Image (cartoon, rainbow over all chains, first blue to last red):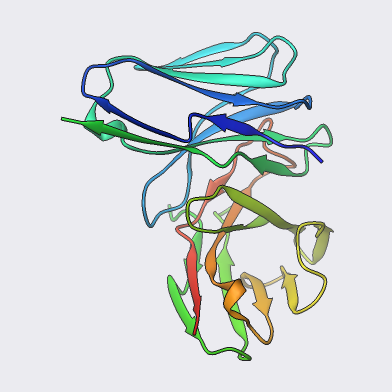
Length: 111
Length: 116
């Protein structure tokens, strides 16, 4: 059974601070995605990484896929209150049909 | 350019009743996925469907749960004889092609089922 573990589970920081969220597994994934979910809404896709070692930037967010395609990280620079939310990593199994999700990191950025 | 539409947003059912959750995928998307989310948890895969076909239902309980995606109309997730443990948020996602690698998933806003 493929599992994705996210850490930390909860993070509360001040506006302007930097943070990194981790997503780890013992399994290899064909791709890995990061989503952000706000209360009462569905997850919104932020990025998909496919190649081992790949780095993608989305404004103040930097996503990295591990060389072995088993782990990923999300780094936020100068966090803002608008970054508050639940960040979910999700991995596609090698067949590509099913995506499994981690339990998420709940981020709270204080003004 | 509507996204994935789920209805109802909130559904209250008494124990033993049936719950029907509907999902209309994005225009042009023929692949539908259902997930369940409990409070403070991630999303658990339930079922993956294409038009008129169930491709993978490995995450769906064998009893009381069923899903369909007919040729015409929305995808339906049906829960018969609901129990309190079925209370959760149910999310539907769609994609234009197979798997998320090249296409990504678009999620609906979910249906929050409460069993009383």
